[in-house]
Structures are given as C-alpha cells and as structure tokens.
Amino acid sequence: MSRKEVPRAGLVKAALAGKLTNAEGARALRLSVRQCQRLKVRFRAEGLRGLVHRRRGQPSPRRCAVEQRAEIVRLMTTTYAGFNDVHLTEKLQELHALPVSRATVRRIRLALGRASPRRRRAPQHRHRRPRAPAMGQLVQLDASLFAWFEDRGPTATLHGLIDDATSIPLALWFRPTEDLHGYTTVLAQTCRRYGVPVTLYGDRLNLFRRNDRHWSLAEELRGQQDPTHFGRMLEDLGIGFIAAQSPQAKGRIERLWGTLQDRLVSELRLRAVASLDHANALLPAFLADFIPRFAQSPADQRSAWRPAPRDLDHLLSCRYERVVAKDNTIQLGPRCVQIPPGPRGRSYAHCRVTVRECLDGRLVVLYQDTLIATQPPPGPDFVLTPRSHPGADRRATRRPRASLGGERVGAPQSPDPEGGGYRGVFPRTAQNRSRGRAPPPRRRLPTIPGERRSHLDSAAGRRPTGG
Image 1 (tube, rainbow, N blue to C red):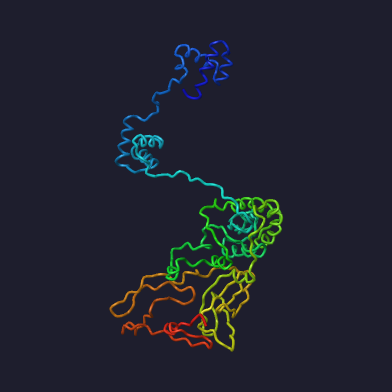
Image 2: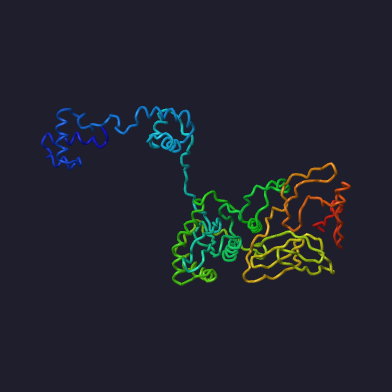
C-alpha cells in the first residue's frame, strides 16, 4: 500500500462499525460517497487487499512492445553504441520510425547495466564567504553595460568599486565601453578619497591580468609573465589582485549593479539626464544619499586604508620604453616630446628612457628615475588607452636557419611595439646574398660625459642604463 492508501483501513473500519457516516468517511478520505461505499464492499470481501488499487503490479498498457524493445537493444549495442540518450532517441525516431521517448531509452539502457557516455558530476558544495573584517582590506571592482539612460541617450558602461566589509560604493564612473580609462579613474578616485586598498577582487579580464600564452625569454627565465598596464599600477601601489573564477564569487558588486539598475536609472530619469558628462557630475550627490541607506558596519572598526602616495598621478599611468632619437625627441603614437638639454648641455640621444602617459593625458619622460621632460595633455577629451602590450616586444619564434650561401633565412619576428622595428632578421642586401657575409656590426654609440661603459656594453654597441 502507498502512503495515500494506508489511512483508508482505519477509516473504513470506523465506517463499517457505524462510528462514521459515509459522508464523513468520504470527506476524510477526500473521495466521493459512492467510492467510499465501494471501498466498504471490497474491504468486507477481500480485507486489506481490497483497498489497494486494482492496477497495482500490472504492466502498463503504454509499455514498449517486446519486438520494439529488442530492436532498440540491438541498435543501442551495435550501430549506435556510445550515443547519448537524446541523440539515440532522435536517431530511432527519424531513421527507424520507432515512437520512443528519451525516458524509455534511458530505462532500457539502465536495465542493460550500461553507463551513460556523458558522465555528470554532482553539484559541488558551496558556502558563503564571510565579509572582510576591516574596511579597505578587500575591494571588488567590475563594470556593468546597461541602458542607463533608457531611450534618452546611448548605452553606457558604469565602472565601480565596492568595499567588501561595508558594501559602500567607493567610486562610480560612466564610460562608453569597459576600458582601462574607466577602471583607472575609479581607482584614482578611491585612492584620493579613502586611501590605497590592500587587495582588489575582479574578474579574469585581460585588462587586469595576462590571458595570452606568449612567454618571452626574459619571462621564462624570471618564471612569470610581465603584468598588464593596470597590473603595473597595482604593483607600484602595493595592491594585490585576486581573479574570481565565477560572477557569484564577487556577489557584492553584482548585487550592487542590480540595485543601481533600479535606483540610479530612476534618478537619471527624474533629472532627465541623457549624457555621460551630466551623469558623472550627478554621481557624487547620488552616492552621498545612497551610502547611508545601504552601508553596513564592519567587524573591525580599524580601517586598512593606506595613505595615497604623492606621485599618485605618475603611478596611475601607462609606461613605455623608448630610445631617444638623434634630435632628442621621443615618439609615442602621434605625439612627439622634445627633450631639453641635460646638465652642462648634455644630449640624451640614443638613451633608453621611460615614457609615462598619465590619466589626464600628460606625458612624463624619465631617465634613470629622473624627470627630464613633460608634455601637457592634448585636450579635455583624452582617453587613456594602452598602445602596446607591456610584454609583447620579444615574441619567441623559431631560430633562423642557415642556408648554403651563408644567408640566414627565417620568418621575421613580430614588430617591436617599443619602436625598434623587426628584431633578429639580417638585412637581405645584394652584397650579403652574393658574398654570404653577415650584416655589418652595429655602430658604436658616442660616450656621454660622466658615464662609464662596461666591456659587455662596448662589445654589443649598447648604451648602458646605469652610470
């Protein structure tokens, strides 16, 4: 008997003894009066067996015929061996005109003791991650592409940072797309208003960490890849980074987007905001009203913020290695920086310098950590965009093979994004092809007064970096 049929025995006995009327027994059994009378007749004749459903233990009238079942077993074990249940059902219906369902195929497969070709794992156990104890210890960052202006303006991306301990939105900024400029802007606002956080928690975006498989020779010797531009900013500020494996791992900021897509959109609609500049100007007032409503108290009242360094503008920048031209200029894309004379009128020609492109568009040129030139921003609409990958200037390629004529033949390496042209390829002139000679050695650079040249630098024709 089933659980539904177990209470019937006591109620039917009470009805037969006259303790219950047929109407009261039918109401208790949730049956009709006539069905209750039938159960009394069957109980008098058969006892408890009469209360069991008549179809119990009998084969289903919709069962698969013996011939069809034998055909399915034959096809399952021969022609379609290894097919999954859905795929096999489709083949049986389309090619063999067998009207079977996926559940029938699965029952036949289990009766044969055959395991499913696609093994499915049980869902892994997950537990809630506790909040960081102190404010500034863990900060989550992300961006949300949404119709923030509805039909009044373009689709924009909102970049943001949120504190894990208090759920306080630290900074928000609108950008047309998710880019380096937006993330650097919210990081700069957070450092100036609160301080430098200990760790950032973001996704696996290629702006945050390297996702390519390229390893240069220097990276292989060092055992790690060069960071991205944003990664170098975090290293200089002493900020750690954790890459989340799923969106649920950084659920604080994901829930923030859900709240902002309701409240912020309504506020923008109320004020008829339809542009990015107007929306960014409204964000400070919105956060001032939003934070007291949703902020929580941290477990530890002592914050983990660190004071921002004085050269924060220089640290939040993209960096490039360049070689000074003969006319003491540095070329960075369409921009050209003229380097003034150094001490005692020295020239920086052929010296390797570091060019930093700041968030506001200023160019800062450093030689051996000394500022030698600056250039103002090109305009108010400047956008900080990485011009080249920091670690992509020396791609590993196959060594050139030597031919019979002495000429080295091989595919040229990738162009050097630092401005040095192609590396590792000899000039293929008519003289070298005819005589099989190696290319002429590099011209030795003039010695700058006050610098010492080592024997390795002199042999390689390089300008030493230290003096």
